Image (cartoon, rainbow, N blue to C red):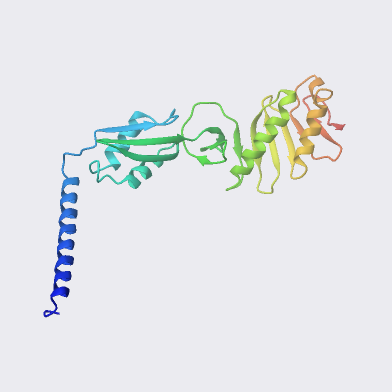
Length: 239
């Protein structure tokens, strides 16, 4: 090799290129870590109603480090995703000194049990809210199904002007719901749509005419439902 001038020249050229690349990398790394590129601005965009300035400030202080070039965007994204109301978040650098977070918040549809909230997409999350919301509950992993049923049942009840305040799916797959007038409807496990539709169809001629609001209605009958009302005996209506 030492006698091969061409090979030696190629080797020398290669070593020179490697040296230049390493020098440029070292210089770039050094410059990027200089304190002349500090992050001066954190901007949060999106339809944000619950993420507060104090929460953003806490995340920035606790989780973010480095300058404009060295800040870890994946770490920044993960830190914001931990905030209670955040459903999705994207982060990007904005030259010369800004990080921009685009946040999508959860939209609470109802309470999930006694400790959480659930969104219209059936996603359970933990956050604090003072608004009065319906209460949905069911076995672990059933939130999407319960939310879907809740929305369908609410639509079915529209003609009689009633709304659901609580709906429960039991471990045995039985459905029970409570309405805004205190009435409890026992739907059971089968033919849910037809049972509730039959109740709505008969409502004005039966339940609405009772002298006192019904406390409990059992819809688990093939051709009707049973009504329990204060001061009245059990009444079965055929539909």
